[in-house]
Length: 90
Image (cartoon, rainbow, N blue to C red; front, top):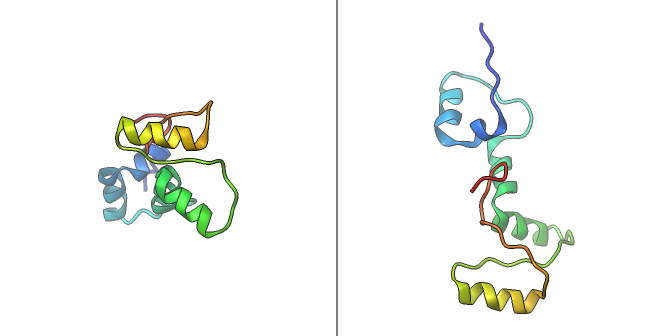
């Protein structure tokens, strides 16, 4: 049986993941669901709080006004990023 190598970004994207699943390929290592959890900042933040694991202050904003309120609460300097990225890409 020929083997194929997939990067993490291929595995978590639904079409590639579905192809692998349909072919009966077992993913060794971190599951796509766990990778997705780690990449989704809001879900990951909630999990960290539930497990009582300290982390830097953060917030989620959908508008400029929301972002400015969070920035005032957290303080400066701060970093602004998309809520879901994989490999540094939005």
